[in-house]
Amino acid sequence: MKTTLTNGQCSLCAGGAAPPNPSKLLISSDNTTCKSLAVEAAESNSTIGDEVCNEYLLIGLTECDCPREGLCTLCEEEGGAIFEPNKTISFDYTCSDLVLEALLESKESATCQNWRATAGVYCGCTNPVAATGYCRLCGEEKLLPEPSRPAGANPRTTCMTVEFNEAGLSCDVLQSTYADLCCDTSDTGVSDAPSLAPTLSETSKASNLSFFGLSSIAFALSFSV
Image (cartoon, rainbow, N blue to C red; front, side, top):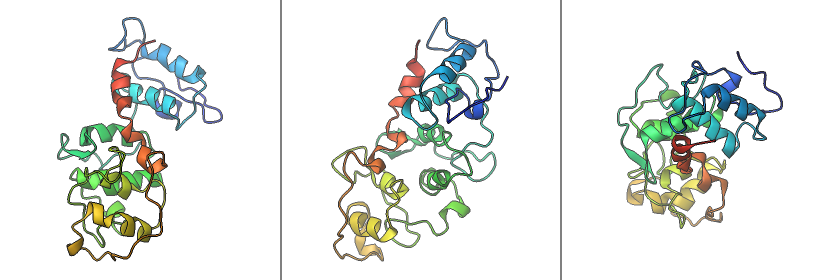
């Protein structure tokens, strides 16, 4: 039975959907079923979008076979598979890791378009809708030569996470600040004029995107109650 959610209440499966196999035991626990974890998620103080709720959702996706309809996929094409699942494209996380992180978003969300224009493209998807007109650090339609190249003091801040642009900075600011770090600038159309914008700090939102907490994945697989 679907859970009726109120005020952004967390759930094990997106939208409050019931886990298909409620009696299934979690791999990481001898006594916890998907049904009991769904109750725990609904009764927790966490809300949709916070770190704890994301942990529940990831467990629901990886262990409880929660439905994925309506959730964000890295490839625009229906049923499209990632061509290079083991490719590392940001910090030490692979395309397979980021497939799960993208599923935390609705496929209709603006954030899903960012996922598809960056991680999706770098993982081998064509994604013409999301990629068209997207701000590229290296100018025009030029892709990053090394998406996982560090772009700041925090090693979790890579060129791809900057291009993801969750902080919503203007394209001019992104390019003038990061082109020298992330691109072969002699081959870009990006101006070399110095930027007046501060470099993103370790505590900025852009340097702490959820996919950098892929301790989430490890946590999900070792979760116990």
